[in-house]
Amino acid sequence: MTALLAGVGTRIAERWLQTVVLAGLLWVATLVVAVRLGHAHPFDTVRLTDWLDRIAAHRTGHSSAAILLVTAAALLAAGAVGLVADALGGLFQWLWGADGAGLPGSLLLRWRRNRWRRLRERDRRAVARAAARAGPGGWLVRARGHRAVRRRRAPEPQRPTRIGECFASVAVRLHARYRLDLEPAWPRLWALLPEPLRLDLAGARTAYDAAARLAGWGLLYAAVALLWWPAALVAAGVLALSVARARAAAAVLAALVEAAVDLHLTALGERLGVEAGEIGRLGSAIGHRLEPPNASP
Image (cartoon, rainbow, N blue to C red; front, top):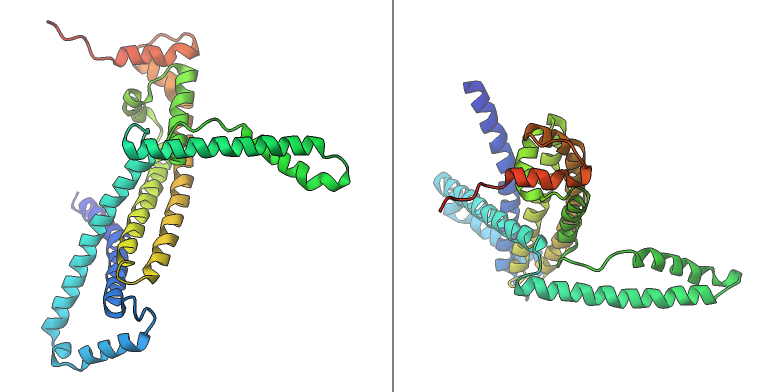
């Protein structure tokens, strides 16, 4: 047991060092550069090296105690900033999965629907032009028309973000297929999943969490841009990368959840004592079994 706990503690420390402390130290270093250079001298490396030389020449720079204190302060600051990035990552996950009931989500959902209608109208005109254009010279218009037909098959957005749309579409398909309410059934279903599928789901969720944390770092770099404008370029790149990774991870996670339900919902029904019947009613039968008993008056 001691060896097991030591191994777990080592893995946790390594993960904390890789995902939080190193990224936090990079952010702290960027903040120091931002404070020293500012907007007026964004790329003046001589100004920065002169400042470092003055610190090295000072007698405090040769003190072991001072170096130790600065190192400890930098590590503590990196850890604290890492916790802030984690919290901001949770905020991004909430935003990505919002249902559009609140004010920010409703505005974003309205924008997505208006954009979808504009693209749909543009695609309709492209299809009309492709149908009217014949002959070898119209191959480009016809190709655009074919792409427009494919885009028109996408339904109207129901969530403020594409990530939320991805998760919500899985719940809608499972409800249409099995009459299943996924939220109360998932903890019971998880207990029946085989270990390889659990590992795949955990890996997809870890990738999604990491993408959200990366978005949190992007927001922190955007804050540094208030002092040093080149940090805005870093923030834009980090945020774009985080959204791309989050969409990919969400697609994999949603597909794995749907596969888990398809493959193991019958087993869950058997374990709960639900009689096998029509597959389209299996989820509703499981839902009735999971409902808490009515409280006595």
